[in-house]
Length: 257
Image (cartoon, rainbow, N blue to C red; front, side, top):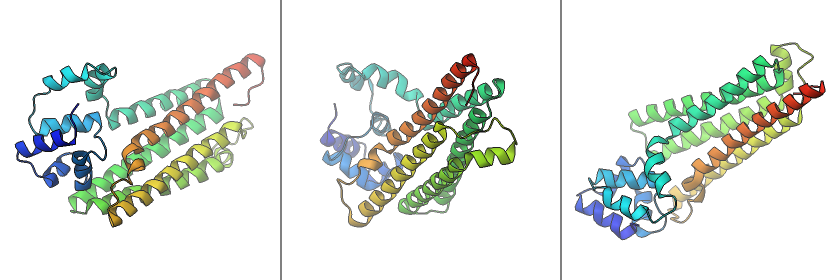
């Protein structure tokens, strides 16, 4: 595979500065420097974009990737996997859980699934709008990033409050004896405790790194998408587990979900 020196040579041969490359990859110049110095490695998607920007034929790279067990996934699945598709898939699965809750008349499952969906959609749309607006105003990457992190933290705290008071909210919306507090309410709360914790760590790490230029302090920043995906998987797992428990309880004639 390509190392930092190779990336640097490719960029220089294409006549692209580090600043211009950072703009094309939608990252900061520090990240480009880290890639070229071997401090960290670019993700496969970033590597493909790097080579595409430099107008490099990707066929030789494909021949190298075939020696890695994940090459097939990288070459064929990666171009079709994007944050937008992941988000659509997450919302789609939760929407199916909402439909299940409505079909089975499970108020708890329906309301929890709707809350997950509304909170995520709200955060996704607003952060996208904020980022787009700040970029159009010419704001620095630091300002854009911190605005993004701050809103995520606020949304996570709001979600904590919502799920902590889920039963009260459900009773306010729909007065029903079928609205009960379950073990899954506490699980949902802890998912957003985790999400808030990661967002706070990310904001602190990014601020310290920006202020003191600590090259090796970027673990959360580099892997944040994975941490966020983990939270989504936990939310889906929770809803599916609720559905399984609900089906078992229906068979026993004692539904709690």
